Picture 1: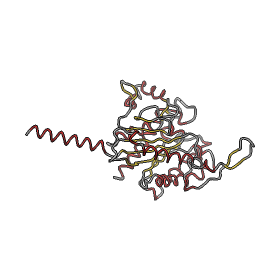
Picture 2 (picture 1 turned 180 degrees about the horizontal axis):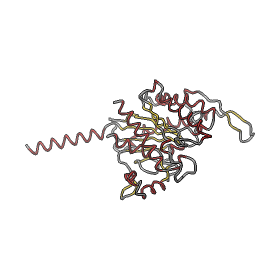
Picture 3 (picture 1 turned 90 degrees about the horizontal axis):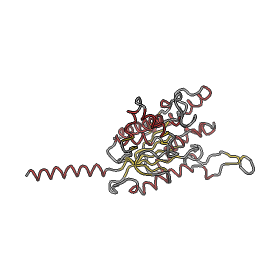
Picture 4 (picture 1 turned 90 degrees about the vertical axis):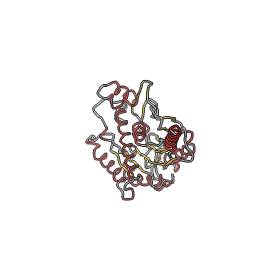
Length: 323
């Protein structure tokens, strides 16, 4: 009888474990331009780990065998920037990392299900042009012809190029998810759980693009949901906070205006409870060492890790609010 009970308990535990492993994979899309590509310097991360005052905060990222790779969070970066277990090496260049690292650790700890991050990011893409969503229609921007030096309209195919690439990469990744997530259960499948958009530099430097930003950003949320057949997919909008909480006086008005445009989209009545806004400016350290000149949040590992973690915290709150 004891042997039979032990076998029954073992079977129930094994079955429960199987069900946990077989739950739908949570899929998150991280999208944007160079700051989403990731410029957090691994060199700086090593310095933070060597400093007793900061080591504790980042010690979970490295063990006796080297940099930690999670067994429950996986990543696919663009068409050709790599795939595998979440760890370092998914920034641009590869000795950098982006928001995916902090984000992945937060969601990995928050959910029992396996997680897949699909990262679609390219530097120098404006929302008004290459990330332009279909609902915004064709833009009317110009460029200088290299041969004639005359000002000519941008080619029509330029509009929405990065948007279309994002949708394509996501669909292709999901069609081959069994190659990205070890032990993927076809019967349980996956769920599109959230989308993080961290972008804006190429729009803030152009007044015309900046004026269109709010409308384009709202259309991006609507169109991504439509094109991925996920009408209730959660969104997190990352603030363009490059200059910190208090930008330089000559740029302050522009930066505060742009940040408000981004936050206002998250507050639209139609997006209530499904779109969040994350301030990134509080994580800027302007008076410390810089690892990328005056750009990309100074390339600091602490800044990029904390930004990614903040994205993750807000996404987790949104997911749990839906349950």
